Image (cartoon, rainbow, N blue to C red; front, side, top):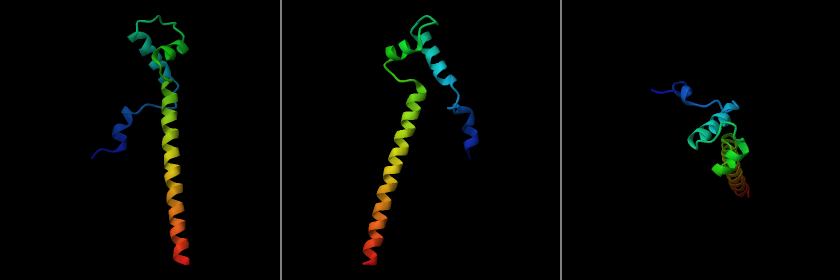
Length: 86
């Protein structure tokens, strides 16, 4: 049986600031750009956000959807209990 520990080697350390650095280096290498190409130019050329920004955005959207579902369920539960009391 596999556990979370078995997958720890595959996970990135999301708090490590090197994720964006590695991504920028890979873009420079794939596109044969000079090593000193500014990172802002890379993101404009790739038409993408930095990796950490994408991850943070996805986490925000997930937490927002969980919040909305929770509030909706609580409203329904409270309405049900209100009707049961009357």
